[in-house]
Image 1 (tube, protein in one colour):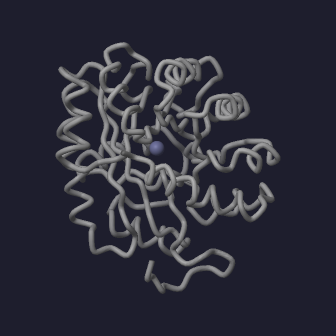
Image 2: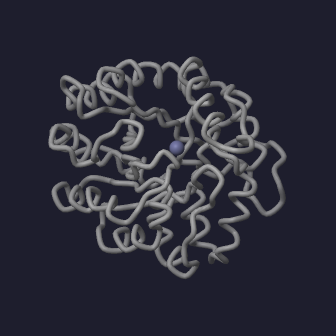
Length: 284
Ligand SMILES: [Zn+2]
């Protein structure tokens, strides 16, 4: 990349990939912001304006973001996918590259067709499922056709597995992703927030299944709690994420948290971008 902005020392210039952000259309972003304001003490670290978010992330050394929409009910995914593609086009001149994602809901009329359209018409290569906001399980059989498509093309799918309003996940809620890895071995399944507060159990799945990955995105005010040695060991399957703008922890604090794991150079490079770049490159 030809980026030359000034970034903090020790952080390579705009080389970091943030695989978990939400650059959403205005009205939806405002609704989500109102939800957070009503449900949390304190403030979130980012405004909802896309350019402002990207400028703040760039100052932390982030050069690429994956922007993840998520369908909260049946019937909205196709429109969200179209707007995800529009947002990518609108931000095409930004120094931070935006990788748009698609979403789908098991209650949609034809989930497989929605996924195909997102990929073939809008060029979206990444997907997001949000099981608490959408109130479903990731392995809902109505999604089987969609999963077949996603798995065949090895499209990375970020899955928020927990159902709590707080954003937390508990260990039994990890079961659907394990069933998906068994049923669709080619699927690339990324456990959002590393299943926090069941992070160690999520890492067990990352270790056991070739298709299971995890992102290290904090949950609103809490960085993910994980044993450093295992983060180092599994780094090739872990991705950095900020959750901007829906987070009280700014990317710099989040990067400092990752540094505290005391990672070796290869592990650090994988988490801060290598894993995400490889996953995208493997999409067929
Ligand atoms: Zn998120």
